[in-house]
Length: 396
Image (cartoon, rainbow, N blue to C red):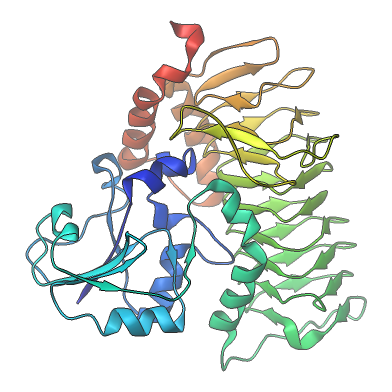
């Protein structure tokens, strides 16, 4: 049996800009990506039913073979997995009109997802359908991932005599972790430190918190809880209730709260994000599906930044700012709250950061983390550049 995670077209659009460069199931939601959650539970490496231009990096399932297809925005739990395992070939699991999973005898194309007998699933499910869901559900999902990753396993020990740990039973270290003169408080939620990660002197970490393999919490950082950092990141300053997908830097002083950063982002020194409006009103953000701003229903909502985007030192992001893919934001004042992909500039206006220049930047940055800007990555960037042209109004 093959496993594939499929993109619901509407949900994929609602989750832009993060799904410009990845399928929905590759979003980090907690310590793990959604795909990694399914892989751990089912012990199957997933393929992807997504946009054609992503296939070079996220390969599709083999044609003509049996397939279990799962909605890529769906986070697994025991009850849901039991219901999926009861599906017979040709049956689909449905909840309130949404397709959750389908068991297909011989997969040919995504039209097969809409065929077969519908089986109702009445229980609640955890879905990531909006960018703010990623940080809003972070605490719950970090707790679940912690249990999944540490079940029946023994943590490595903290040997540093100057580190203070509260509730050590909820702190887990993979091999190769370095912790020096830090404070780790797991009284409100677990703390997971991935392989070869590092927590430097004077850092304060409150759970729930997850740190990816090879990532670093810089000296004197303040991690205030409900935070998941992916692999090979550097994080410092003050962070609260935020997710960083991986390979990104927020290494300096400055506040990041109720925010989501993609991969290969860089946050300049002393950059701050507003996550609460002065009048305590509901935050609105740019909605790609609507083509305008939409109400989030949230009081706290910060920054959403797509892959390969950067900002200069002392950048000030207003509440509910959305930055697309491969944008470079700098300059005095507050930039607008929707910054299109491949924008270069700030409050004073934008020019276009063209794909050849993005390639130069990525080819310099990615090898520093042991990754390569290959043909598959270049195809994605070139396609996203074309898909997002409508938003670069200064070109028109």
